[in-house]
Amino acid sequence: MKNQKGLCLIGFLLILGALLLIIGGVVVWEKKVTPSPTPFITPAQRPTPTQLPKMPPTSASSYKTSIPTLIYQKSGGCGNIVVYKINESETEGISVEADKDKVNLSTKPKTFDIATTAGLVVQIFLGENLRESMKATSFCNDFVSPIVPEPAVWTAKTGRATINISKSNDSAPVWERGYTATVKLKNVRFYDESGVNSVVLDELIFENISVGWLPG
Image: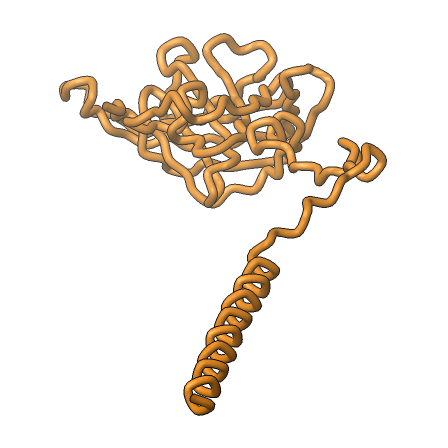
């Protein structure tokens, strides 16, 4: 009889110990998973607009205020006539457009006053992917993109351009009358679109540029 009572007491103690272990484990688990309260931020602690990081201006807007470097690595031409030079990144380029018939180009060099010569336009373009720009069509590209940002344009107002061309095969179709053009710019002053800022190009030569062919 005493043995039975002892066994019952041991069993009761074992069950009680197991229950205490289970309850203790639940309490510990709740402490681990209970999220910490979100700290309250007072208005004084919130960052003001002046404390936020300033984003750099977009490249399209920055080109509007950029000054031309007048440094170019590549050149080309087309039409009757267009010659151009452009930098490696195609973010700055210069073009000379001369109406072959209007200014009466020939194999002998002729010097024109940019300020007074109708049919002669000299411009600098600043932007992105200039050869794909719909506005900068002076780079003889077959493809233009409507999503390329509009470039900034600097237009020559004074200076001189000396131009001569080689003989062309006038019996060939218009789009196949290839010939070359040499253009020398001297003391050319360009103004930005506001007409306030200007730069002077001392001299630049486009030598034996292939022209006469038509893009497309």
